[in-house]
Length: 295
Image (cartoon, rainbow, N blue to C red):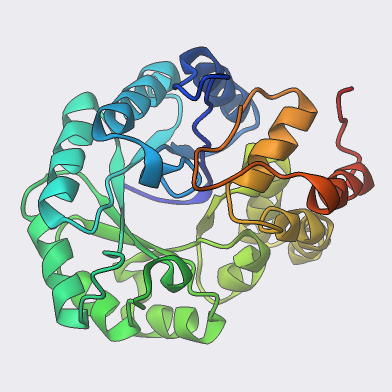
């Protein structure tokens, strides 16, 4: 299986009473597919996986797979700091027809490099679909080092790494060590172009929830050799990408979606919705990018 292009870390829409909004989720899948994305990633950080029950988690995966109907790749979130729970989620995704799974490094436990390797090896040995490992030290408290990624390349199902360390030097070292043994995907919208320049093949994006066609175009232009246009798109998207983290994600992207008439609903506690100065700042950025705001 090849991973290339723009994948979207899809939000999980909620109703006014805080329950899963199935129709809004289905509508958003259609919006993203119409935007030309290569794939959709349900139940990642942007999907508020930390506050979904496992029943809800699996239901979100099921809905996205059903709605996509094989038109794009589905990389189902299956991350946990409990290896057994991660295996259960991975097996469910596999059974329901996901193309791959996304597994974040175990958070809070702070495992060693050996512990992270064994975590992934145990999941790998329990499934038969591809796995994307996900490194985001700012969220987890641990950093998956390039030497450990090289070891993970030995595992038959580990085909890609979503890198959100923010360290382009580290990401470059992964490519230097691993070459084409593993596919590099950006986990940071603002660094997608630099990561492409050191061997990356795509992104798992937050900002693509609202402007999928722009991130698709950035990656396509770069991979097709039109670096000047890719740079133009990078600079156009940069303020918008930065605004998606003006507060803890996914509060900003859900606010942007709601302003655009894409029904994302609220975030779940302990996150809160954007208000006041940060919301006004977001509106200013959206308007500067010629994004239509309703109301």
